[in-house]
Length: 116
Length: 236
Image (cartoon, rainbow over all chains, first blue to last red; front, side, top):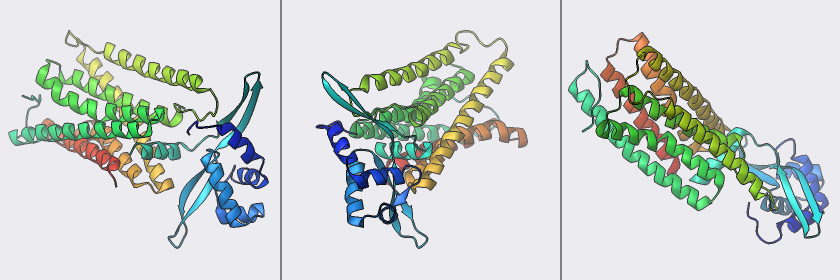
């Protein structure tokens, strides 16, 4: 979660996108694969993948590895933010993200893998 | 060199126990170095607390087990309190990284707030540690040994319980994310916290095992636990 450049601006322009918002809503209550998202959001898979990359870059979604019944790996995506706040005062504006609660076991795994 | 207060077993078992503890201590120092390197590479506060937790869980108790009987005149009971308290603090630190929020995801200048929360958690840990050490019957021999050993049993039980919970969390992290390191981390934490408790308190009640054999089996579990954590930090 780097604070480089004007990350707030990147988040705001990303939220201006109709598909990015649709992805955030769709994966807010369940993890979905890119093809499931393409169907839900009515967009092509390349469009979905481009939005997913931008959303993940801003820390708004997180990807997980899953195994299908045939043993193939595929990725699912989960929204990682509950609230985006824009605060405005004389000095400018600030964009802050309120992360959504993460499963303790997943958080433990993510933190421990970061230590390796 | 290292004295182990125990009677009723073959001398070879005592020597073996000492050798196993020495190996576990060496390996736990490697674990500390790896955890520190991991933190330096990530630079994240959550990883710092997690690394500190691992050190308190492995390196500190293992080193104390070798250093205390060699250099100080502490009783076996006092040593158990110190090593168990360190393990419990390590588990609390790990639980804090999981359930607390030592890292900030804010995109604005909200870092100071997160730092305050982090300091509060650290302070709570420190107070807990000081309270535990302060409650030690240092200086005078415990006048009511039964009461003291009851306290140690309660502390050990609490540590075993917290360890089982963290081990279970690690195991479900392995299941949910197919992360093999989490499998070995969970195994290691169980071997360091829960298994020695069962061996020391449970098995003794059922089998008439000699004190030396219990100490030996506990040392084997501790070594296996440190090794499992080392293995989980190395590239699996």
